[in-house]
Length: 135
Image (cartoon, rainbow, N blue to C red; front, side, top):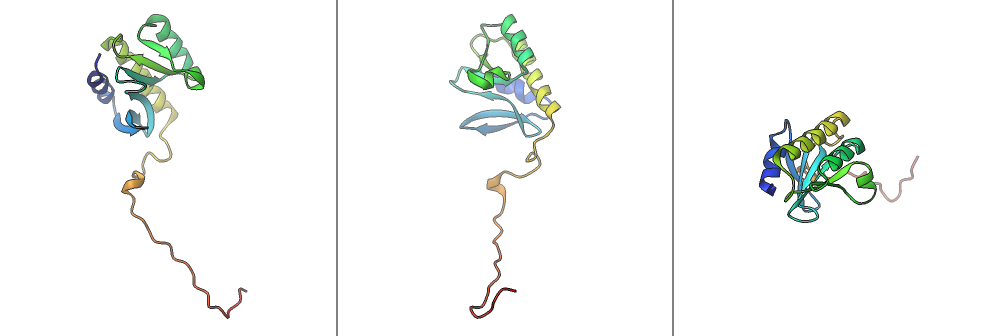
């Protein structure tokens, strides 16, 4: 599997969009990240699964799927070895990850424009004259 193949499969999923997260591509639905690409290296990806889904994939395809280190991995974040994964297994993992993100619902910021796209609105401050007192 290539990074381009990972991207093609992820973006073929309903409502999936690509953004960037910490300098590498991520894939989102409803503002929620369900997969990333290119971390820790160009031959890796990551899918956000449930711990049960992760265990099943690692058991079936331990050469292609491994838990991410630490708490993220304990909670289901799963590394994908692009050099070992086949299209069917990756498609299954990405589909599960997308379904998990949809089940959580959209993020609060999903409908907002990115911060860079927002226009700055100047604040108005009340002026007080020196001799007046607050009542």
